[in-house]
Length: 315
Ligand SMILES: Nc1ncnc2c1ncn2[C@@H]1O[C@H](COP(=O)(O)OP(=O)(O)O)[C@@H](O)[C@H]1O
Ligand SMILES: [Mg+2]
Image (cartoon, rainbow, N blue to C red):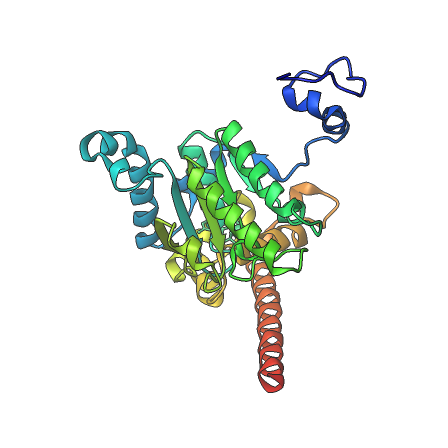
């Protein structure tokens, strides 16, 4: 019985694999189409050090406990034989949740810095495709790239990809299931650190929830933390004339991200003189910017409230 038959079509000169011999067009297509970019590799910098974050004590404790668990993994395996009860014992999924601007993304960078690894940040707009089967392919590719780069895999603001109703351009339920299964399989095969962040994780797929080792809740800063946040975000104190205690009291309800914006806007407002020697940030400028941010936030909350009520009536 003949085992092979001569190919009927002419092979490209660089056809190397058996698959190429069976289908010479395949290799041509692969060389023509570049691999899509489905994530961004971010190198953490010294300024992302965890010590530079102003966090509630319990959040700091949880982060350090998570880091310690990662650092002692090899010893734990040796002593406890963990892989006997937890097959993907190399993998660790951390979930950072809480209001926007509380330092979740920064903490992920801090962890990557501490682990001396880059962060592979998934780009949802590139992963999610309206073409049948492409989203699952992109998910697999993201994991492959993170593995190749030995990176911490980072799903920032993950709700769109990780919720029960996995957002997808593909509308049929088969492909939604396919995407979800692919994501869970890839997570199970991934032997590294995964960080997911979200403002609200009530919509997370239960299959994902089951795989998360540690949930860390980020909260808005209290008054003494806001005071520190102002000092941190006004790095040239010689040019600042401000009463930090009053700023901390006035900025109740603002996040670290809001305080960053207040400080940046006050710095811009204080740099209008043609002579940079006269640039100053004053208490008045800072208070003015606090008022603006608070007003914008309250208008935004008001709007969301209205939207919610409308949905409530119609359903
Ligand atoms: N806890 C914090 N400590 C120090 N700076 C903070 C903190 N939270 C927020 N910031 C500032 O706000 C910016 C945005 O924070 P980010 O980590 O993106 O928030 P989140 O991911 O929770 O929305 C940071 O780059 C930092 O300047
Ligand atoms: Mg973020």
